[in-house]
Every structure is written in C-alpha cells, then in structure tokens.
Length: 185
Image (cartoon, rainbow, N blue to C red; front, top):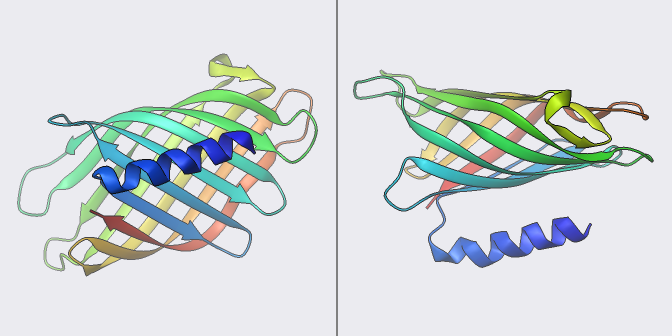
C-alpha cells in the first residue's frame, strides 16, 4: 500500500509538468492506471502503472522503453520495446515479489479510416528475472480504439495478467474484457 501511495503521488506531481500519456481502463473486477512520458529529445520513454484487482491484489510497474515508427507512410505502424519492473502483490500470503519483464507494443492506425486503430502489448518475466516469491509474470493486452478527439481515444480491449509464485497459488490480476480511455497531452 505504501508503494501505491508513492506511485500515485509521483504521478500527480509529474502530470502538470508536461505529461505525455494517461491511460485508464477498467471492468467489473479490475482497473489499470498508466502514465507515460518521453525523455526530452529522445525516443526513450518511461512509464509507471498500477493494476488493481478487487479480489486478487495489485501489480505496480515502472518501465523504460524505446519507441518509434515501425513502418513508413501516412498512417504508420508504431512500436516500442523495453523492460518493466513489476511488483506483483497478490492478496494471499507469500504472493509478492519483484520481477523484470521484457516486451513491447504495436499500434496500427487503419489507413482509410484513421480514427480507428488496433494495438497490442506483451510482457513476459521468467523466473530468472524474479526477486522474492514471484516466479513468472505474463501481461498481454489487445485493444481496438476510436479516436474521439485529436488527443483522446476510447477503446475496448481484452487483457490477461498473471503472476506465478514459489510457495503460493498463482494470482490472476485481470483476465477479460475492459473499456478505457487514452489521453495524450
């Protein structure tokens, strides 16, 4: 809980200073808040996020990734590759630990209908990159978005986030459909 308060405080403090992206999604059991900002004059960016499941716990992450255009043209394919440090804190005893997950994302805007886009991300953390009780992390997401305003998308997606632990059952932080908004400023 203390880490969550520190993360939220940092997000609120940094938001007015020139934020780049704020993403909020939810369903009946879980919500995710994610904040991302590029480093000045670079394709390198950082992000921080919080995923909360009403019954299964919290996953906090901070990451670095390199992003850019993955194709050429007027409606390019955008992508990113990087690493996330994820503190996976399930609600049961022995369900906590830090794990580093490698992964990335792709976003494609339809050429003839440039208000529509599809995006996906995948992050995987194997046991060798874990500290504490966590042995494996999987975080996958797929979404379809509609650009409501120049800097705001509404979307529907599906997400699967699971952590496996050494001495405790696995925790599913999210496994289903969600809706969300993505704001860029």
